[in-house]
Length: 445
Ligand code: 5CA
Image 1 (cartoon, rainbow, N blue to C red):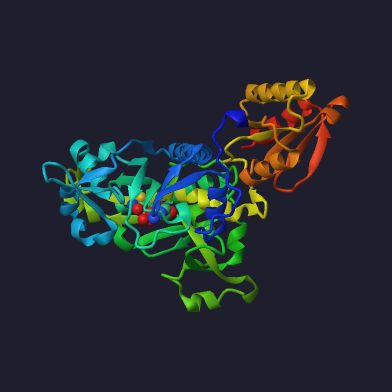
Image 2: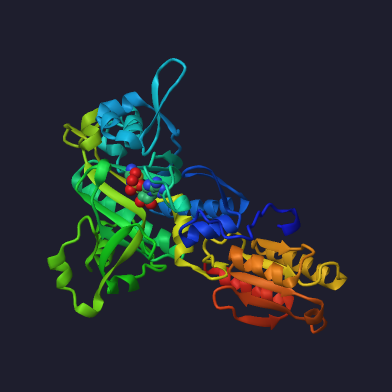
């Protein structure tokens, strides 16, 4: 993409309404625009990152054997009357009437609707296990929307629902989600710690939240800091192997890590003092096992192998897709701007032309752009007639992890400069070598 033809409305001034760094940087980098309290347009740069995050979520869900579908944002109130949540949900639910005076709502979550789909089409244990998920906009009329996309009213969520014949199978589904989430967050450059939590309006007694440690997080967290060193990495996981998946969950949940809702001071005090930490965290996901809460209320049953009919066992599992942009920026920025992890960067590299209009520099930039594209790498090419300093400041602000700087002086020696956004280190090399290097870096992502 040529910057001269792109739509990147960066702001020079720091917006005064933004209280935390991720919100400030998303506004300054021209990623989002607020349309009403907690409701945002996703401008092209923000939208690119949102799509990359969605893509990682899809890949890891499908790797775990979960099946995508798409349910609507608007839901009939009658489904929620069946579960009893239409009245229970309170003022967070946005209620709407259509022209026929039928009650609708803008979905804050989809347990009822997915249970309705299940009961209409599935009736036997032979069709199980089944996990269906979607990535769809939600609306919760939060009393205090704040921190930009971090606590929005309209926000994008991945929500998945498992259906199983018995409790053991449903707990395996819970564990499968935990492991798939660990890989999902790692691919986004995040350390997200599963912490025992409280279930709130979703229900059930077995639930974990995934928290990214950050000063600006809304939850208070208590943990053994050895938990932050755990990594799933690129291990091959057989998601059908219950023991293997359970062992990974055990590895990631046996050290103490809890939110204030479930904190147990006696257990916490038993951690060696050097490892005992209190901090704050951003909740980027939550998984729930709630058994037959919805299936019983809504009559979703399956025939078992011995001919009985039982309410299907369920759980639901959410990832805060739009919130993740804020969480990633909170975890990865400096005083110049955002530093995107390679896994979610909106463009793989930036190209800065130090002398627009110089025929050698222009040709070298065009060549680099084409060579990167041939390797499947996207570049944002700053071809504006601007000072070098302004071009560098824009690149630093929007946070592309790698920048190639091209100028007439370097080209006389046959070199361009490759700069790492995170370390600030620069290295001179031929244009071909720079493209090769980036190809190798991104091969691991
Ligand atoms: N049905 C369940 C799981 S599918 C559910 O709704 N879970 S949840 O309430 O925990 O939401 C899932 C994730 O959505 C949260 O972990 C959080 O990351 C994100 N989320 C929740 N509320 C908001 C909000 N107001 N703004 C942005 N993200 C949110």
